[in-house]
Length: 106
Image (tube, rainbow, N blue to C red; front, side):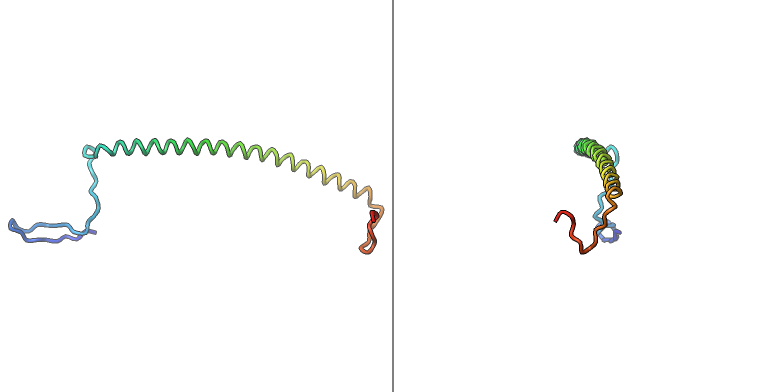
């Protein structure tokens, strides 16, 4: 917020603004020349950043697709191994090993 201070001078009272450090907006025709160059540089930088991020997203998408395929294969293999082990347990369920009994390979 600006504070208005009135000063008495030879030509009468003048209003002097103090404490208002905000820059006043420039009109469309009053913009400095470097503004267009800065905007073009910034636009180029943003386009490069978007291109880089797009490439990274595509690479990560390929990685995720490969991992999904590998995960599906591994899940299938684990399911097959679990089924085999269940069949073995059913086939060998005749012998019961007690806690104090030594396993047969000793």
